[in-house]
Length: 256
Ligand SMILES: NC(=O)c1ccc[n+]([C@@H]2O[C@H](COP(=O)([O-])OP(=O)(O)OC[C@H]3O[C@@H](n4cnc5c(N)ncnc54)[C@H](O)[C@@H]3O)[C@@H](O)[C@H]2O)c1
Picture (cartoon, helix red, strand yellow):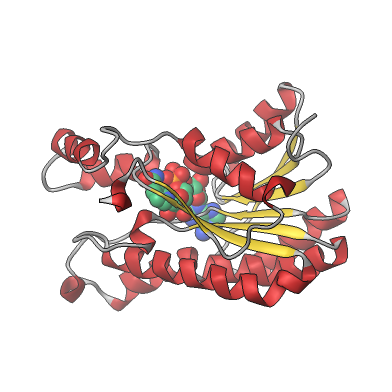
């Protein structure tokens, strides 16, 4: 028996990195998975691999920063599978890495469009669908950077902080509908997002990666599956009394 049998899950940003690991794990644990992303070929490959391994998945092109796109796609997924029980708001971008006084309005807005409005749009349009299903679980990917500060990527900190509190407010609004809303706060996890930050880092790739290992008391960055297991728990009925919570998966980073 799987931990999320008979559930339909939508994972935004499911084509790569953490989102891909979440899609694979939810499918392995029995969910029907809608992989939603703007990267068509990798997204289709994730769905195809799941289906080849005996799971059930399909790819849906969806830009979370465009409300009409989100509304249309979530409605189409619900029509195809009859319901949506799990939404993982995972799509995210890191964006400009400069001191705040050098960041342009356009750079700031670009992060908020995906990381904050994307979560808002997907939540807004999944709520009626989850209400119709009688229950639901929404898991929002925030970050350690939504909990504590550090001198890099300022708009990302602001965005992930916003996601943390949107999560708690949404949890209050929809608790009576049996829709739970929780946030997950990963430390550094080795994905394309981090690879890109390392490549663009002024200190160079190697030094950046050494630094990332040093700042996590466990001594190394995490891997996507470390986060996926936390998401699986929150998505499943095992977490039926958990809402408005923050699950920190950070190798001890914020315990210091
Ligand atoms: N990797 C880390 O160290 C880390 C740490 C903390 C939090 N997070 C968060 O976890 C989530 C996943 O991060 P990741 O490292 O796997 O990133 P990633 O860059 O490897 O993957 C992000 C995915 O989101 C998709 N995406 C981007 N913009 C989109 C849009 N507008 N609409 C739909 N999909 C879009 C991308 O195409 C990609 O498939 C993000 O929200 C990120 O902020 C990551």
